[in-house]
Amino acid sequence: MHRFHYQQGQLFCENVSLQSLAEKHGTPLYVYSKATVTDHFTRLDAALMGLDHLICYAVKANSNLSILATIARLGGGFDIVSAGELYRVIKAGGDAGKCTFAGVGKTRGEIEYALQQGIYCFNAESEAELVFINEVAGSLGKKAPVAVRVNPNVDAKTHAKITTGKSENKFGIDFDRIAEVYARIASDMPNLVIRGLQMHIGSQLTSVDPFVEAVRKVSPLVAEMKAQHGLEFFSIGGGIGINYRQCLDSGDASWWEQNSAEQHPLTIQKYAESVVPLLKPLGLRILCEPGRFMVGNAGALLTQVLYEKRGAAKVFKIVDAGMNDLIRPTLYEGWHQIVPLKQPAAGETELADIVGPICETGDYLAQNRDVAPVKAGEYIAAMSAGAYGFTMASNYNTRPMPAEILVDGDQAHIVRERQTLDDVLKGEHVV
Ligand SMILES: *Cc1c(COP(=O)(O)O)cnc(C)c1O
Image (cartoon, helix red, strand yellow):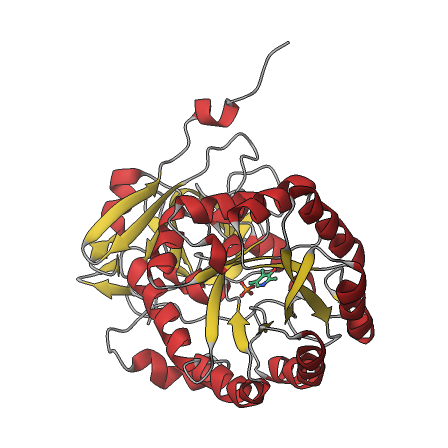
């Protein structure tokens, strides 16, 4: 369930009018639905019930402290990719002992911090990294729990920039070398403790087939490594795709599930039904690292139309949110549903480009889109902006980062204040 819907002619997030939030807090403004995050966590958790499992939310999708706290309270763990993300998890009340640390370029400082905090596991992406973690752990007199990330060379059939499980991607260690790498850890790296094996083949997968292919390919290796080295877990990564096309809830509780089969080829039921039976015989703890699935549909970016420009070729609606606020359309060809905060008359649309104020041709939220005929001064929302939205925002063009709001029922909490210009310039010096 995505808790965004029209009510009395206005777009609501749960029980809060988005128009009222835009007027009160200004735009651009990120708004998140706590109930949606909770619902997605709970449904995934239930779907994996047949397995000993731990959901490690991928913090990079949305790292706001209140989002992390929401997931921590539900019992979730976290997949982190930097010391900064671990710092956030701890500040949000999360358990370091439920954190896995991914990424190809961990530094000494990051490894030391993670060891001191007692994370669950380092997911290592190269032999050089394993050698280095062994050395750092030794120098601290600690043992580092590790898993090796396997690159299964499976095509996730997603956008090229979010494909991670092919041999030509920088991630993981080649499938054929994995057994040798574990043997080397066991014989030559006394400060490492083998804890698991991990993979992550890509993001925004809309078919279950690549997941099944990867699990089928890697499972025998997992069983073999378990027999030889006593693995505790197998992490199947994240990547569960979401529906970017149909982001509003009609108000009927069963609607989303009923429509999901055709609208959303990868439902959580289908995912679980396909992978759980393959994973169960391994007799291991299964880790899952969803980012986008947990928060993507839980967020919207609100923006105001500043001007309309009718060019020779196109109509442009110039809005106050730019690619510095939401970079997905230009970085990944990401598609966000654009809806007005005031419910439009049915059928009335206009072909337009929704563009930002940034001095870049790539600065757009939507191109050649049939949108409601919104006028200057009116507000629109880019839907499903809860994942890889704010976390990828920047100060490009010296634009302060937008505020973030977490809606919980009829309450709207400011969970990050809008930056001031002094915040943006902090730490700079004129010499
Ligand atoms: C980014 C990432 C994830 C999350 O991917 P989603 O597509 O957002 O689910 C999970 N695991 C690793 C290692 C990642 O880098």
